[in-house]
Image (cartoon, rainbow, N blue to C red; front, side):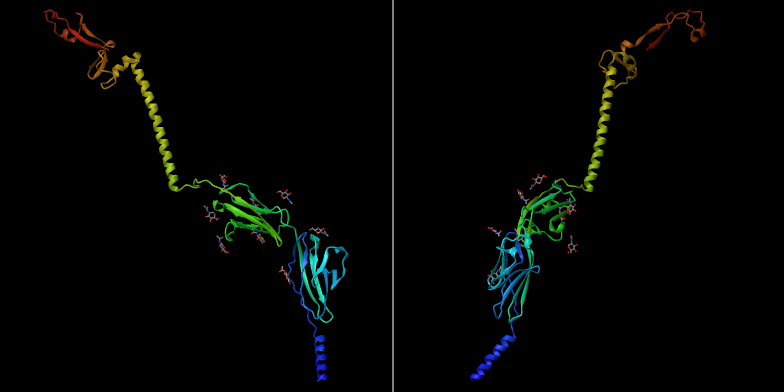
Length: 337
Ligand SMILES: *[C@@H]1O[C@H](CO)[C@@H](O)[C@H](O)[C@H]1NC(C)=O
Ligand SMILES: *[C@@H]1O[C@H](CO)[C@@H](O)[C@H](O)[C@H]1NC(C)=O
Ligand SMILES: *[C@@H]1O[C@H](CO)[C@@H](O)[C@H](O)[C@H]1NC(C)=O
Ligand SMILES: *[C@@H]1O[C@H](CO)[C@@H](O)[C@H](O)[C@H]1NC(C)=O
Ligand SMILES: *[C@@H]1O[C@H](CO)[C@@H](O)[C@H](O)[C@H]1NC(C)=O
Ligand SMILES: *[C@@H]1O[C@H](CO)[C@@H](O)[C@H](O)[C@H]1NC(C)=O
Ligand SMILES: *[C@@H]1O[C@H](CO)[C@@H](O)[C@H](O)[C@H]1NC(C)=O
Ligand SMILES: *[C@@H]1O[C@H](CO)[C@@H](O)[C@H](O)[C@H]1NC(C)=O
């Protein structure tokens, strides 16, 4: 029995020695770090024996650890430490600490395990701001740009309007790697608060700007009916105005003429031309009417003229009677005007 137990033990030892573990390194660490903070690359693994852990950066050895730090690169004196079973901590990081970090975990009995960390060091995001170009715009502006910037740390730029993501299929166009939000043919519906989130994997900052596309409520274009109405109205107005001017000129001329008629210098001539129905008053005792023509007394000479005896009218010559002609004188009426 004892020999059998010994054999079993020997066999077990043989199996263990011959079938050493494949060391698998695992980590839940991010490779992204903020400048000035600690770089912390934590690892876990299983091995059949105590393993030694070595860290290198870009193929340059930083540190070797076997329960304690055995050696480390002089440049990292005071900044570098190993915690747990081989996790790396580098304090007060700078951008120079970025690079590919590789860990090797090895033991005599096991197959060596490795893992690589592409470490990136980011500046904190500072002074994020949004600017607008052109700085003022209305609904006739063809393009408005909202541009996001930060003094440091900007890697990713995302835009929201009133806290909601922008509709993907619209007048919004993202340019310059997200820094520029271009709005084509902006109108009042685009007004609102636009927020830019400037971020990197370890830091972010937001900046907000209010877009104000000004507009007037006056309709930008008139209907055909309105245009026709305006044209017709204008023409009618012009015609009315011209008519009014002609009427005024006519009235003025008429009034001047009326004044002239009252002018005594021209009265004689005018009186002869005056037909009944004119403005001359028939009640005026200075006027009288004959054959529907109005005359003025003072300007007309009227009377009876006695013919003399030496009258040689044909009537007198054809009647050579001995009797003297009747003594009654021949009267001839004449009107001199
Ligand atoms: C990573 O895992 C360790 C334990 O293995 C745990 O203490 C630590 O909180 C974890 N870190 C993260 C960021 O999950
Ligand atoms: C690391 O930064 C801390 C403050 O965060 C400071 O107190 C310390 O002196 C710095 N160490 C080195 C080595 O620069
Ligand atoms: C950030 O902005 C502040 C004031 O707004 C200014 O004093 C500071 O210099 C700016 N920082 C950088 C890095 O531009
Ligand atoms: C808007 O931004 C784009 C891209 O940077 C640029 O080409 C364009 O000239 C800008 N337009 C205005 C009005 O600023
Ligand atoms: C919206 O996007 C779809 C495809 O993504 C495209 O077919 C369509 O023309 C777009 N519509 C407008 C108004 O841009
Ligand atoms: C404003 O612009 C959007 C997108 O270009 C368009 O769908 C909408 O009809 C416009 N609204 C007005 C009032 O012009
Ligand atoms: C800004 O973006 C970062 C990275 O995506 C995110 O973690 C953060 O919550 C965002 N901030 C806001 C206010 O949306
Ligand atoms: C937008 O601008 C117009 C003038 O350009 C101004 O009258 C109006 O108050 C502004 N609106 C807002 C919300 O700032």
